[in-house]
View 1 (spheres, one colour):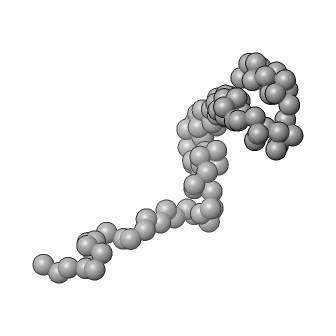
View 2 (view 1 turned 90 degrees about the vertical axis):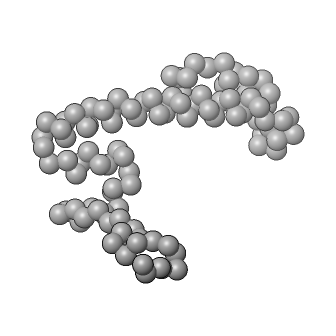
Amino acid sequence: MSSLSNGASRRVPATLRLSTSRGQQSDLGRPDARWRLVRNPLLRALAWIVMAAARPLVRWQTRIRDRDYLQRLPDYLLSDMGLDPHELREEARKPFWRP
């Protein structure tokens, strides 16, 4: 049995590289750009629909998280940022679908 310094097998590469025929290696980490790499037109359309439906959900979730975070900030940090507590309350009362 041969031992390597990091304990990994020689048959398993240290990093997995996904090759594409178009050379768009940098887009593989972005879920919203992966649908462009699908070659089947039906699957490509389905992936586009799923990503188009997911974008507003992610945006809404971000708004909920940011407004909740603003509500939890102490007053001295709000004054450092130049936010008025009244403005903060108005922003926190907005529904998640309104910007």
